[in-house]
Image (tube, helix red, strand yellow):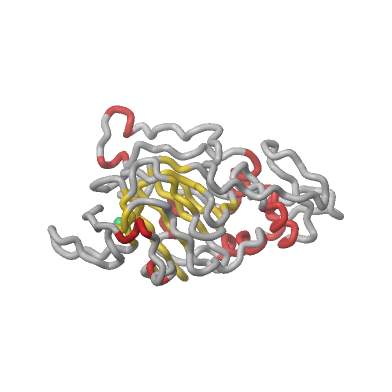
Length: 282
Ligand SMILES: [Zn+2]
């Protein structure tokens, strides 16, 4: 794996690892990648012109959704009817460039990868890649994933009608299109809609192996292999998958175990929008 990730000859060759994470969404990754892999020269995607050694890397525009070059096709089963199985409408970017190759080499972005990320601890290779990209344990408290909306359902609470059901995350009701932001710096692990019920689902891997998941999205603007920054817009809230209305379903895992995300946000300082009523969501 190491040989796969870093193919360097006296600083003249390609670092697949560093280059792979430098999609359009992650201009600042170069600095981190250089620190994390000092033996490798960073080669960036064609979309991002190479920078002179030692040049300053522009700070990311956290408020701008990354541009999607091409959206993935709508799955065949969704073309005729909007059945529940279709889990859509799918609106996720088609991965491109070295980032796509990097993610593919690591096995990121697949249905299998998503199934693992939401059930068990991330693979060693994924954590190793995250560390080499300069990602560390997320800064706590986590950043709120939305700037407006309302606090919906809490962690572990059963649904009032239909009997108790464990809720493995928390819900923020938010209008379709509300910006969804990364709660901490992360490597994008999955961005698609193949996990039944979750709709368009984004899964981020943080430097210490914790994982954040963002479900029912109307659109995702980043793809596996990219590095995203705390507070960066990465998606838009929606109501895809099994959902009663527009909201963000957010999950937080440590070592593969679901945790109450509220324990990682700033409980003492709820934003004003969080204090409003709590309607039933998914
Ligand atoms: Zn939920």
